[in-house]
Structures are given as C-alpha cells and as structure tokens.
Amino acid sequence: MVPGRFSLPEENRDRVVATYAIETALSLEEVSDGLCAEQSTGTWESVERETEDLVSRCGARAVGSWRRGDHVVLRIAFPTGNFGCSIPMLLSTVAGNLYEMGSFRRTRLLDLEFPDAFVEGFEGPSFGIDGCRELLGVTDRPLLGTIIKPNVGLSPEEFGEACYESARGGVDFVKDDELVADPGYSPISDRVTEAMDGLDRVEEETGERKMFAANVTDEVDGIVDNAEEARDAGANCLMLNFVTAGLSALRVLTSEMDLPVHCHRDMFAAFTRVPDHGVSPALLNKLVRLCGGDQAHVGSIDGKLYESNDEVVANAAPLRERWLLKSTLPVSSGGLHAGKVAANLDRLGEDVLILAGGGIHGHPGGTTAGARSMRQAMEVAAGDRELGESPEMKAALEKWSPVKAGEDGN
Image (cartoon, rainbow, N blue to C red; front, side, top):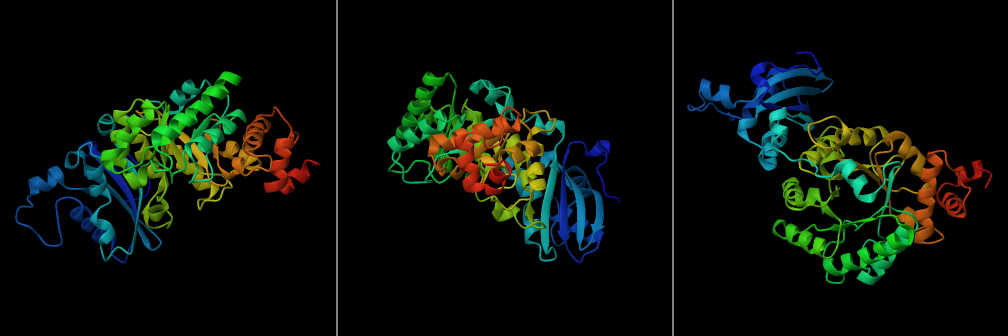
C-alpha cells in the first residue's frame, strides 16, 4: 500500500492504529504478518485454536505498509477489545514483544491513532492550559516558571526562601527538581509549607497568584499518599516523574487528585533518543494527555537537550491539537536563560510554560534578579521592552549571550 493517512474501513473503526518504522531485511508481507501475529492472535507456529472467527474478532490487521530505505513503515490496526482502556495493556499490545524480534533490527513506534470511542474512556486533563491560566490569573502572556536549585540538599527553610525570591522576581510557577520528592532532610509536608508561605508572601506584596508543584513521585502505593500530604500542606499543583513511576500511575494520580499535575519526563531519552528505535517523544506526550497530565515537558528551543528545534515543536503539537480532551500545557525546559526566551516563544507560541533553573538561580545578581531577567525577556518578545535595557537582563545576556548583549550596544 502507499504511504499516507487515510480513512479506515468501517470494520477497523473500533481499532487503535499504530505506525511503526522497522529496520529489517524481511519483505513487507513477512514483516506485516509477523507483527500482526506476534502482537495479537498468533505465535511463531500455527495453533489449532487460532480459528478464522477468532482472528477476525481479535487479530491485528495491516492497513498500510511501504518501504523507506532499509526500513519498513507499517500501519497496524489493533481491536480495542483486546486491551480496553488500560494503558499497561495498550502498551503491551502495541509495543510489546515486537522489540525482541530477532529479525527486526530496530523498531520505532511513531504514533498511535485512537478512535473517539476509545478516547472517551479517559478523562484527560482536568485543568490543562486554560485551567492553569485561570488558577494563576494570567491570560494575556506566556507563563514563567523555575526549578529550585541546587537540585538536592536544601532544607525546607532554604527552599522556601528560594521560592520567595523566585516569585518576587516574577515567576508564576515554582517546582521541585525531579531529584527531590520526600527525602529525610526535606519531608514533603515541611517543604510544601515553607514553599507556599514564600509564595503567599509574594501574592500579598504584589497581588500576583503563584503555583507550586510538589514532587510526589514514589512507589505506586505511596504516590497518592504523598499527593494528599502535599495538598493538605497547601500545595496547589503536583508533580510526577511519570516515566519512572509509569503512565498508569499518572492516570491514577490525575483521577484521584483535584489539582493540576506537572509531568516530568526524566529517563524518557532511554527509549526516545535513538531516532530509529524506541518510541517517539511526541507520542509519549499524546499518552500523557490521554492519562490526564495538565503540564508536560517538550524540550527547549536552542536548549541543552538532545532534540532539534523542529523536534521540540513536534513534541508540543499533540498537547494542543484539536482532540476530545482538554489541551495540555507544553513546558519548555532545559538550559534556558533570558537570551533564549524570544526564540522559544517564536517557535512554541504563547500557550507555553517557560521553565528555567540555572538561568534564574545562576544569575550574577541572584535568584530574584534572574527571575526578573526572564520576565523582562518575555516583555522584549512581546515588543514592550528593548533587549538588554534593564540591569538584570543586561547581566544575564553578558553572562550567557554576549553576542546578543553586544548587538544591543551594551
């Protein structure tokens, strides 16, 4: 069959369609038949109970295949009745044993297309872009956030002071680092209390509402307990390392807690970074949205991570495209500072959370000055301020973007 998207026949419309790129020496037919059998009704040898009726009801079907160099691209339709609205069983079906097949040298799961009836089995984000904006009272500009640094080791009191200094400089959102959850030196309840005290002080001083995302990552049976503890201590957002905890854990958390959930993707590159193997990060974000994530990392434009700028834009697309579920807020993070704000907003638009750690806390003038430099850079991007005109922005550009600082005559 020829490449491209096309309407499925009526008998395939209760199926999830997976698109793969597989490096193999096998023919199109051999790859297609082998994958369909392995991931649905068959195995390496014929089985007496594999009847025509059973295969018709439960068998995977190829709905498209073509050659692309050394790779075979396949579109395979899987009956939703094989796995229901279960994320673990969905992934076992579309991304299970096929990665172990000796004749498939490399396999990339590129995308999953879901029928409406399947999507309706999921609640999706409770807050998403509009809900997060409403909670913060910010509707007319991009959102700005920070990760408290150093990553680990701060006492709750030191952490709370860093939150205060960040918010005083103009960030809307503060979060734990992914390496901090509930360590003995900074228990969740103590850290959240100090963080919210700092943010509440800034709201009293400036009238700006702030959001703090407490990392509740733990063993599966401890995640909701941590979340309840964080909520009871005043947290108005939660954070989950959803790759290490699992997408199913994310779905449980978002369904159990009436707070926005910030989704950190650490360890994702273990299966996304090799371009012709693993799973595409854009698909991972589609699954985050399906599981109810309100905010999700997409990489950063001109940042420190492995993805190209075009890939970052592609990662953000599934979070905001038209769907039955609310949109998820894209989070740009990874090596950002004031000199990179404009490029990120140019490529990702205004419905984004720009997140900086070292680019705020490593500022020569300290945390508050670093936050101000980022907020001012947003004003530059909006045309409300000149590049490098403030001392905070000038110091940031001289440290991290000397060429841009020089171009501005400073």
